[in-house]
Length: 431
Image 1 (cartoon, one colour):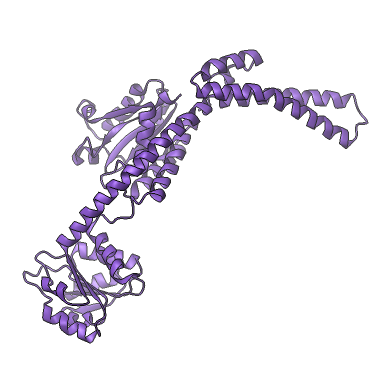
Image 2 (cartoon, rainbow, N blue to C red):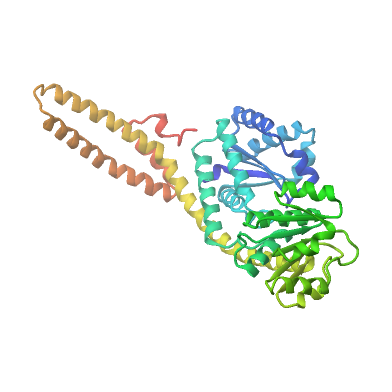
């Protein structure tokens, strides 16, 4: 059964961004593709994952090439792209390789930024969209449910998501190391650069309050301060505010340092030597490098932060190896689960048939016992259910064991023939 699982697509590993952004479809277009491809009967189940870094078709089909070919032809046609030009960029995985890929994608082991958390939400959204189009059956449901569980385990049992891999997050991580907790720490943002603003927002998310904003352009300072729900500060007044805050982020375009060693010495005296952390994201630097030599002053520039990011990326790669081992073990478990799924319809059909017989025989018996009291009725129910369970035990165990040994289909045929189960019990799970 696992041989029918497939994934085909392109990603940041195989296709340039110009192709990926052109192929990415809006939700209404994805619905059209899902319904149209599933309606052609080339696959029994289907899901499309479309993000800025990958467009992938997941499905269940006896002939995967026909299914994903139809999906990508339609998607490329929607965008006016030539499918023949797209085809060399596509990869296809089937069976256990497809399951492994699904688990790795959900767990962010195949992401451009290893360990990034957004991909799991995107996979869940894609799955929900396919479900709403009624093109998901038991196998894709089982595959994605397991993928979500595996992703959660990788995140909680490894530290792949712990280490910051952006300059702005690295700044937050360093601030936390210096202060222990960021709750209630105050921030001064000097300049309105994008990275500085991002670092300020990350610090806010960690509990800092408030964020003062100083900028040469007073209107820009007011606008950004309003966005960050903090006070605006006249540019010429920022040195006095430094004495009050705990963290200073600088990101101005000034060609020379705007904060000197002498400035910081004066501020530290006014602060009674309380630590002051500078995050200097500007290039050229806004803070004189020698500030870092002062007691209780900590200054990190862009290169410092990047070295932290690179070190963290190496840590993530080490953690990813643990994640890969976990994923491989889960693929083996999923293969066993799919084998069980192969024989479940037969087991269900067999139980339904025997249950129908049991209910009929109990009704006939009670018809011959019009004066039967409640105790007698309960005894008959219990007796008949026990007989059915004993009869079911042998075939159920045999079906599960044979399925795990790779002979499930043959025993499905045998059991179906012996008990007269018909087509429903022979053809696998309903779609």
